[in-house]
Image (cartoon, rainbow, N blue to C red; front, side):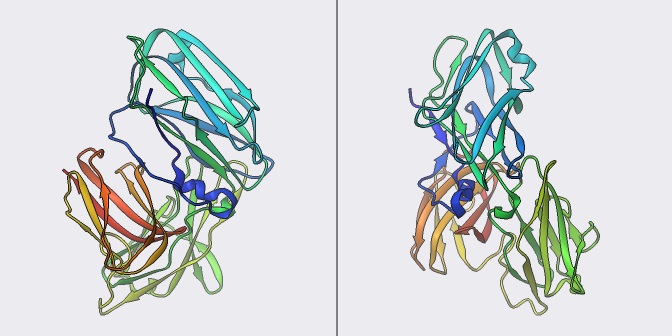
Length: 349
């Protein structure tokens, strides 16, 4: 069996303040996928982590081996099982062998069809700042004809305290009339409140002519409202058990429009061509960037391609295969460590 196992490794950067990415994952978009959400939580508190599926069509059984970072997480149970699984037998057990893993097996009396649904919740106690949940390479999905699904995708997740959220919102400089975007990762169980520094006090932002997304993971700032020039922003992330605040980020607005934007689809850091693309793209860099990562997300914000490019050298284009992406509109982002350096809209035909 050949099963693609993706670790959603961009946010595995959480662990120990930024472990390096070791590879990249590709997916076409129609294959069955089992994915674990990313959550925030407090040390000493229990967090319910959803295990979700996409394109789970005519499935007779599945086996999941979820590798658990037991130095930071303690497994406490499984509940809220999807009613479609009631037709079969669901068994789970935790093994402390190396690597420690939660083993979950379901065998149905008849096949099930699930799409964009939750299979169940798994519960963990967070013992330290960050715990990573990786899908083991021996995960398996079986069709109704008892054939193993060779192109199944298994995507890991994480639990982290809000204080170590990666990436932090980035400082921006944009021309007047551009829209600036501050963002943090869209955690499944988080609520968001963007704040602005006013007269030495942090004030909650509300959606108005100057702002959109005040209570989402992405704040849009309309720079034609000049009062936002030299403003400082941060985001408060909250879960049921705790909350935390990101580092502050500043916004500089160039009234003459002489500086190119580092937000939205315009930037002076990278160039992507061809765009639209079909099989591959070339990415040219105008600055040397160390510890670089390219992330491509779909319109729902789900990571579809992730590539660690190490050191990017000025004027030396890098090739990236994109043939596994379905036709559509995507967001390509360049990270330098844990900061977003550039964002581009990418069209796949």
